[in-house]
Image (cartoon, rainbow, N blue to C red; front, side, top):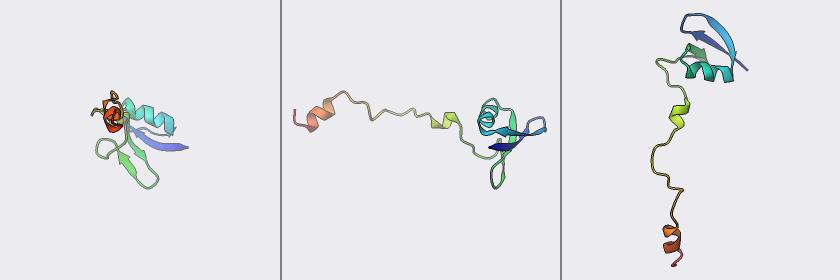
Length: 73
């Protein structure tokens, strides 16, 4: 699947999705075309790997005390 992009220098191009992700990460793209509208990366929200990071406590990791007390041990 190719996606229309406009680079910061004004040049237009068609790129594969995996390359769009790279170009967005290194800051080379000014705009890209979604299925129904153009996205300006300086104004419109876009997904990024940084948005997926979680810095809170990890509730899935436990030391066993919760299990022991819940089981009456």
